[in-house]
Amino acid sequence: MVTFLAGGTGTPKLLAGAADVFPPDTVTVVGNTGDDVELGGLLICPDLDTVLFDRGGVLDRETWWGIAEDTHETNTELFALADAAGLDGGPRYLDPQQQTTGREISRWRRFSGVAEFMAIGDRDRAVHITRTSLLDEGKTLTEATGILADAFDLSVTLLPMSDEPVATMIHTPGRILHFQEYWVARRGEPTVDDVEYRGADEAAPTPSVMDALDAPVVIGPSNPVTSIGPILSLPGVETALSHVPVVVVSPFIEDEVFSGPAASLMRGIGVEPSTTGVAELYPFADAFVLDAADNTKLDRHVVKTNTTIDTEADSKRVANAVADALSEVQ
Image 1 (cartoon, rainbow, N blue to C red):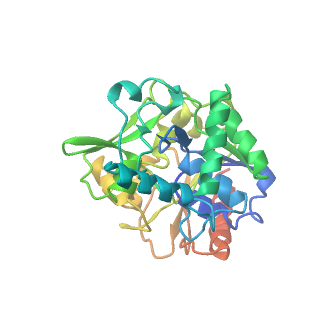
Image 2: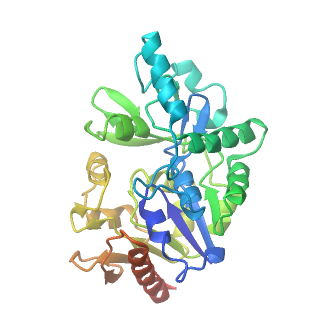
């Protein structure tokens, strides 16, 4: 048995061709929910959905977001209505009182759907409607995720990190932005002064997550601040990780990040944006998989390979390196 901590695209890409290395029925994936937003009354869980859609065989692997060949009729009509009514586009936060009322799991991340700032496909939207409806029927996010996983015939076990709200908030000069506004609406352009995992102190990992953290853990080449950081912010998670073998695939080659805003975010929280900085953020890690061109010296076991993941053959190569690293530290 092995548990992957997943957020963004790094860990899902690692899993994409890893079935021969890590048989799916032995894999649990714990997904970040700090990026989740409520948009137009629907709870959207981007990091859970990337795993759900990819392992379900429908992910758009060009974008690693949404469902392949999806239509966007509803999204198009929302913009047409907003234009006809003279309404400004998004992101449009609901007012402060509404941020903390209503559906509890949506606290601090509630946006109006008027001219929605995230492009949600029609089939994709059906998933969000189903998830939100299940929550409103009284299911937990873990239960709703399990039902959706069955619908997509997942062979891995997919778990949200918590059934309680945690929102990743980016502190920028003059404003605090939800991560999705920072990254999707503002394209990661604002200067990052700090990153807050709002609600983490009052939230908790689910019992299923804590059980999963009894197994060896793999952290793929995901953004350590906003993809993995919210999971680590939950009480008890880092302690649990200190008692099991943990292997990390660096999302950097020395000080060059593969993709995304990890460098800006790490700099914003006062950590060097590099493989060295990643190791600082993961003091519990026992081993690292680094790119063959990465000459960073670490005080942990290191396995090297080409860590670029563009194809399933790439992910299988990196997964083999992860398996080698695990064999050295178990």
